[in-house]
Structure formats: C-alpha cells, structure tokens
Length: 445
Image (cartoon, rainbow, N blue to C red):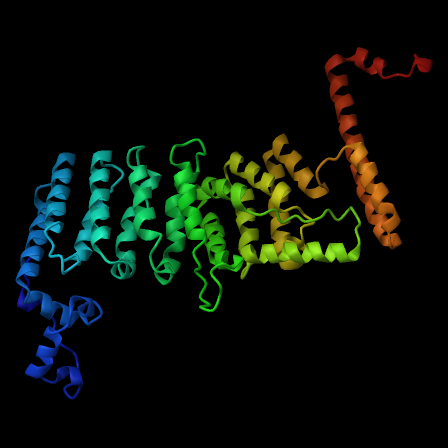
C-alpha cells in the first residue's frame, strides 16, 4: 500500500516554533544512531524515518501489505479466509529479528477481528487465533502492553461463540501473553478481560472450566491498585478485581451465570456470628473486626457495587439466576451481616431488601422459601436452640437483649405453627370430611 504525497496533511505548527525549523544534518545522524530498543520510545516521525531507510523492514512491510490487500479482493468463501490468514502469517514470519514490530498494525488488528466473526466456521477462528499468538510472541511485553487496546477487542468475544476446539486456544493465548503484562496496562482493560472469561465459567462440568477459573484467579492476584506503595501480598490488592467483577454482573445480564459460579467458590462468607446468640463483648468485637477487615478487601472502596450486584441479580429475568443469588444471600450475606449493618448506607440496604422482596411476584415456592430463610435466619433443630439459649442465658446483660432473643424465638414458633396449619388445611382439602374428622379429639368424636 503506497502513500500518496497529496494525501498527507501539512504541519500546522506556527512558523516560529521548533517543529517548523529545518533539522540539521547532525540531528538526523543522531536519530539514525539510535538502537532498536531506543527507537521504540521515540516519536512516530523518528521511527518512520529509521524504518524506511532499513531495506529489510521495507521488504517486510511490503509483504504484509500485499497479504492485507487480499482481504478486499479474494475473499468469497470461508476457505479464502484461511488462505488469507496463512498468507498473512507467512508475511509476519519474515520479520527481521532486530525489528519486533507489526507494520500496518491497525489494519492487521481489524482484519483479524473480522476473521473471528461468529458466522465463520471454527477452522477460520483457529487460524485467526494462531496469527494472534504469533503476533503476541514477537512483540515485547512493553510493546504488547501499549498495543493491548488494539488487539483485545478482537479476541474478547471469542468464548461466547467458540467451539470446543477453539476455546482452549483462546484460554492459552490469554494465559501465556496477557496475564503477565504490566499491571498499569491491565487495569483499564480488566473489566473487558473478565467479561471475556466469564462464558468459560457458566458450565462447571465443561472441560475448560478449571482452566478458566485458574486464569481468572491469576488476574485476581495481580496488584492493580493505583497506590504504588501498597503491598502486593496484602488482601487489599484484589479490591479492584472484585469491583470490576461486581460491575460486570451489574451491566451484563448475560454474564451473571459465570459471575455466580465464581462467587460461589471464592466470595468469603460475610455473615459473622448470629445476632441471636449473645456472647461476651470482647469476643464479639474481635470477631467483628476480623470479619470487617476481610470484607474491606472485597467491597472497598465502593460497597454499593456489591449491593447492586445482588440487587440486579435478584431482579434478573431468569429464575435460575434469581434462585442462585438468593442462595448466596442466605449463605454469604445474611441480613445480620456486619457488612450490611456497618459498611452500607441505609439507601443501599433498602435497595437490597426491596430487590429480595420482589421475588415474591414470581409466585415460586422455591424463591419464597429462600427469601424466608434470609429474613428470619436458617432453620435450627430444637436441641440446638435449647443449647444455644442455655449457653446465652447467663450472659444476658439487659432486658433489651433478652427481648431480642424472645422476639426471634416467637417468630420462629409462629412460622412453624403457620406451616403446620397450612399442611392441615391442604390435607383437609384433599381428603374431605374424613381428614377433618381425624383431627377431632377422641372426647368429642
């Protein structure tokens, strides 16, 4: 692809500026004496000037341009796409060892992204990922970090449509080249990377599930905090990952099954000690501070993202997603959790409770049962209740605390009595007069 001098725009630099002044021969010699590593950090004008004078680079760039020209003329069937990618790969393999760069990289990235169209067969997808892999292998990590925004949009949607033969190629590409990039380059792209990996977590029985989980955990362990003084071994280094994961669930309903699979495995239980069991103040304070420190490593700096992650999941159109988020509420984020009581605003708590209560509109008994467990706490055996109350009784410090335990036990009793009444009523409807007479005491029969 030749350049037409008429297409080049003139410099808009003022006449008195340094850019408008003629460059001396000594300055040109200084630029030509730069090493390839130094050229990489120079201005585009210097890079172009040095590369154009390199015979090997001109031959390399011309072969890449000839391969790219085939995309506009020779692509009629899917076999033509494979032929084009093979030609492009062969052209890229002719690069000079001293110049690990990609000429016309913007056009190359666009053509490769077009070859990953879901309507094309898996053979084209495999060949395109092979070319991506070769490009990533010849680029140095610093250069790939700068060009990540150029190549990532093309490969990000792959798992959402890839066949079983293509999925391992994509995962190996991410694990081999993207995970180890500079954290400053990964930070703005982390949400997109998580969204690209979540389709691999939707089915726990798939062959690629463990590989996808392993890669996601590698991103979680990278310190992406803006504070350069933070310790990479500190739990707070994963705060940015959790915030991006919650945001991905909020903004992308189609990815919530993958988010649920990850939360079920790695979200810590933020419930703490049950408020109905009274303990000593010192032990209660120690447990509360420890729990809050764990919670801060996940929900900070914006606890509202966790609340909205659950609220949007509870409002999802799919019954399975609502049920799984309710299960997470019961097991990981109960209503008495210090996170909900101390770390969230009243407005956020109201949003969560309203979203949870909204599941009753489904008129589904499985959802109602889970909502009941979240509001009143899980069921416990009679022996366990008596033991817990017996241990707690000597430590009751005020009538207010005792009334809390009484109110809770009274609510549990009313719940059990209502369930028995409903059972008797349903049985009476099914068996008629016989069922009703069977409940009459013998003295009145």
